[in-house]
Structures are given as C-alpha cells and as structure tokens.
Amino acid sequence: MVSPAQAIAAVKMMESREAIALVKISTGVYRTALVCIVLLAAGCARTNPPEKTYALRGVIVGLNPQIKTATIRHEKIGDWMEAMTMEFPVKDPAEFAKLQVGQKITATVHVRPETFAYWIANIHTEGP
Ligand SMILES: [Cu+2]
Image 1 (cartoon, rainbow, N blue to C red):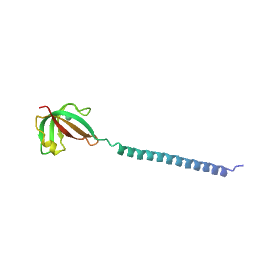
Image 2: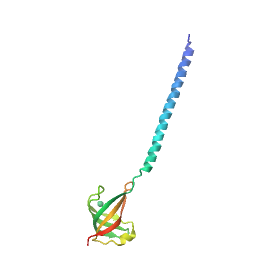
Image 3: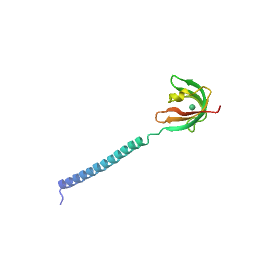
C-alpha cells in the first residue's frame, strides 16, 4: 500500500523533475536566443552598408569656396535621385579648385547610406 504521505512525496518528486526539465528547456531557449543575438550583432557589423557610388552628369551652376561645395543641376542619378539642382560637397580641394560655373561635368557621387553623407569626386569636364 502507498500511504498518502508517500503519494504526496512521489508527486512532489515528479514536480521537481518537471521543474528541472523546464529550467533545462528554458536555459536552452535562452542560449539559443543569445547565440542568435550574437550572430545578428556580428552580421550587422559585417554587413555594415558599404559606400555606394553613382555616376553623375550635370552643369555647375554655383560654387561655394568657403565650404567647398558645388551647386550642380544634375540629371537623374541612378536609383538614388531624380534630376534636380542641389549642392554637393567636393572632398578634394585640388578638384574643387579646377571647377568653374557653367562647366558641364561628369563625376562619381559617393553615398554613405547609414549617415546619408554624400560627396563628389573624380570630376571631369565634358564638352567645350
Ligand atoms: Cu539631387
């Protein structure tokens, strides 16, 4: 015969085993989640959006020597921007020095998608 006390003890033992099993499962889930987070973080660092470059064609309509920007009436720039007139920073002072209002140019637009920073380089005059 099993006494009520023994029955209760048996149930308690089973419960504690279940509790241990639950702890093991949840620890496993926690570890899996942690591994995922670590992998995601590593993935983020690795897939840090690279600098994008686009071909630009346009006309220089203004120059600001103080901040080294060229206002350019540009054609559509790839999938980045429609045709418009706007200012572009020119990183290289030597390149900026050669620019003149009225010049038709081609250039490379560099864009850093994560900061929205952009500038132009590799500037060539086009036509006469
Ligand atoms: Cu634009």
